[in-house]
Length: 252
Ligand SMILES: Nc1ncnc2c1ncn2[C@@H]1O[C@H](COP(=O)(O)OP(=O)(O)OP(=O)(O)O)[C@@H](O)[C@H]1O
Ligand SMILES: [Mg+2]
Image (cartoon, rainbow, N blue to C red; front, side, top):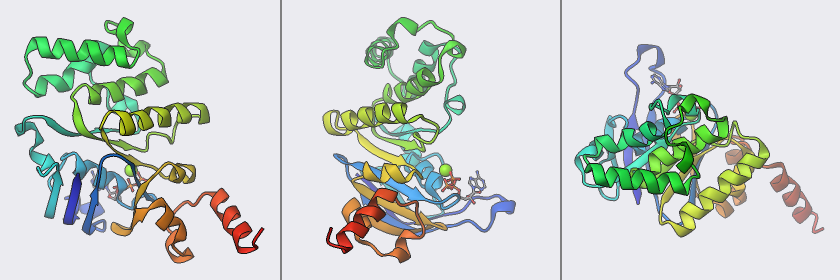
């Protein structure tokens, strides 16, 4: 479970003093696809970074499996990993194998355990025969897969995807959602996906909606659909939903 209790956060950057995440409280469970939505600058990535403990909160508490993710390297087991939108910002190794090993080195595992995890994860993502390959030789899609693999090799309880679908073509988007479904429903992995794409709303089972640093909605997709225009104005809303509502209102 991920629990935010009265979390406030602001960046210590004078030029950005206006943004504040304001006393945000919610809890997310494994077993369903959790989505974070909101316009540009609403605080989606800030919440994602707090979930994986990239920075400490100013007030309130963040808990993942009952522990503070900001301290996660001192816990046994890895709580939560993040996959950024742009693979170029995430890849740190010169080769596929080095990239897979990088995060593991911080977890203090034995050499044998690291080797075992790398071999298994590479196989799962179809990267087995590329372990020695320079990362620069990989295609965009392969880089994206490597980013996911390099987080999952650390065996986190939760994975946060920050706008993973925005740069994907429709076909790759379908592939992405297939992988997510598999993780959520067959691998007991907690998943949160940040997205601004209206069509991704159809994939989310639980939704957190942010506007100007405030959590303005939390609930199921069904509840989100039922909410009025006052709420929907903050978000990209699938055209198909509007059409279906229109048909329903006319009893067609
Ligand atoms: N490292 C930082 N230092 C200072 N201000 C920041 C930093 N990162 C983000 N901000 C500011 O905080 C606010 C919220 O940013 P955040 O990245 O959480 O928004 P977002 O909802 O993810 O937006 P986007 O859709 O553009 O990704 C923005 O005004 C942003 O400019
Ligand atoms: Mg963002």
